[in-house]
Length: 156
Image (cartoon, rainbow, N blue to C red; front, top):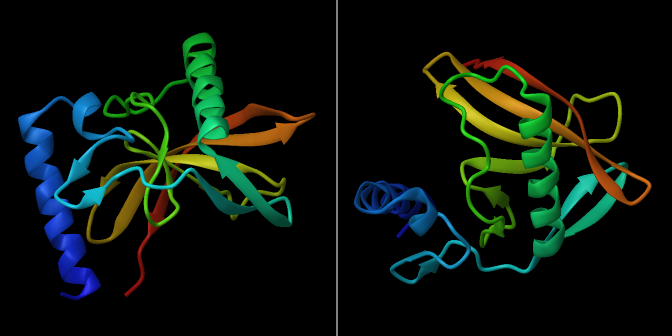
């Protein structure tokens, strides 16, 4: 089976699982669909601040707590469909750090070396809208440095 076909089956199976159980039950590090476990790695490596940065499950949970605190205290104006990271952080088999529907990744367009937590709000044929929360490592502690809604126009 090709990778594309497998991903299609995985997405379909995940959609069925979502319909049958609450998000906290199907999108956690212990969840699995068939033989595919959603959270199978203990750490991953992201390019950050000009070097490779190892992100562990514990550090991902710390980042999640920092983001939850920021959202609770600062109450930024988010799209109504955006939900806070609602499940425990996990690292999938491809090395992607996930927190519910949020994905931790390098902030490529940032002037400062940052990571971003990205939530896909809307996908269409012509553009993608993402809610992003930017994070920086300052004195050994993760801090939210800002948030934004970003629209990317797709080119074909």
